[in-house]
Image (cartoon, rainbow over all chains, first blue to last red; front, side, top):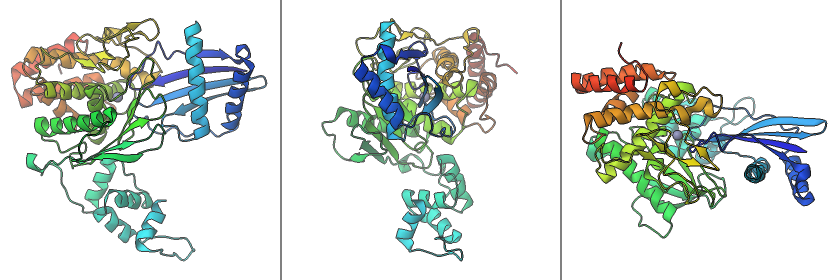
Length: 105
Length: 363
Ligand SMILES: [Zn+2]
């Protein structure tokens, strides 16, 4: 499974820091990969309907996540504030992993 | 939720189809006379938008009080409420400090309370504006929002502040101009409704930086020369190589860090960034109007809120300012408002400043 992640906007919009990051989940410790898979599943990532984007909220960020898992691949953009707890957990964990991936580069 | 709230207050009313309704005239009366929560519930039920501007327009249509512009300084009364989200993302959270209550031991709560007060006082005293909507809107802010939350935003009704991420960002209440910035989004949403995209979005962002910075200058009683013109000073932790998030005096110079990258703001149209990110680079291209404001403030001297700030405030409220305004359209209105409020010297200073950042403002 591969996850791509990008942050957009925010009060401290930082284009350099927010550049897309790719997380190769196969290279993570198995427990961590399983945890991410679980979060993807619990958020119904591949099946949930796309949330309607309203007018942009000043300084609120959006997070674009692509999950590529063999035959299944989906890109979704999630806008702050994130109402759904499962989606919020997924974004939080993927952000953390993206930060580590960025530091490894 | 909205209808059930109203039912709880007035009892159910059944329509012939069996669904529960309230007669529209009753809803209108609630919308007009109820407290804020009842009013919002009523407007929801009527299917009406109750964002600030829309609800005021609606209330005026419904025959509500036309409060705008009638208050005078003595009538501007602060009503601040600070909430604690307890590290959840549920708004608004629990009330931790109401207007007039003494300071407690929570730094974020006190900074938010004081920052709301400073911003309210600034707009009231410098521009005779009665709160965000110029109609005495209560000021609500939530602190301790989310976990390791490195952002602050205005959700259309209230401010939301995260505690930072314990790594690169400190708490977002640390800098008074950040609080002023977020509240000014409320003012812009109420007045010009500049769309948050492209040049209009960058103007929206810039206006928040301009008045955020002026709040800080007003509290410190600093002249244009003395001010630091930094946005978000103190927001970065000691790990980051940078003094602040943005600099109106020298856009592009606020930070240069191995992890965060370099401050991307241009100070001139020649550096305008075309991008689909960040709603068309609204936090990047705001450097151009930010710098134009700085140049006017320094050229005119003294306290920046007195002349430069007044010109920008008049332009923000100018009915000719369209929600999709470009830099050039905004700049032209600035020039006209400078001449109207002050005279030829100020008009020429504004024209020259916009010209220096690459925006032709002469007609
Ligand atoms: Zn903003």
